[in-house]
Amino acid sequence: MWVFGLPRGGVPVALEVAKALQAPLDVLVVRKLGVPGHEELALGAIAAGGGEVLNEGLIRQLGISPAAVQAVRAREREELARREQAYRGARPFPELKGQTVILVDDGLATGATMKAAIAAVRALGPSRVVVAVPVAPQNTLQELAHLADAVVCPLVPAGFEAVGQWYLEFPQTSDAEVLQALAESGRRE
Image (cartoon, rainbow, N blue to C red):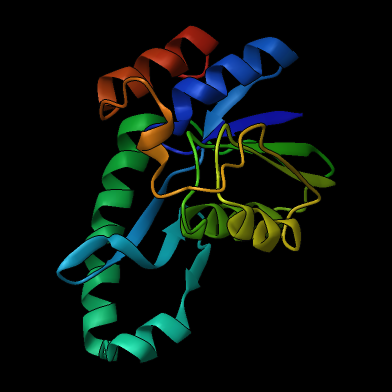
């Protein structure tokens, strides 16, 4: 069994899950592809290892050109590569064939990054993929239930607007905090 945190905010949550399950912790770097001018709205997401999802309906609805999508993708691939190097360095990605993989984030809104993470790990042949998040809207969880073998989410509020509204404090997680969590788990060499 492996627990993967989606950086940055998912890694501290994943550390606690890994401790509780006495399972190894690692990171699966994902990046939201934000709508130009409205970056918080996901037109899709990419993950290390090649996972990618696009919301074609939203792209058509907003009239986003293929060139604009490609520009966003290129920019986010650069940041994905930077974070992959910062968090993993030369350490190889773990062997997941036949393993249970638990993907953890600090919460979900559209679920785009989690969908990309699921696609990336599915390609590596795990026996089960479990999504675990503290909070998400019902419609996102329903979508993920078709992609993952199990979805665990204790808080499914009817009035969901953003992940941060369900935390008393919701500061941005830093690269240093991700590295600290990995070091605490023994996964950053």
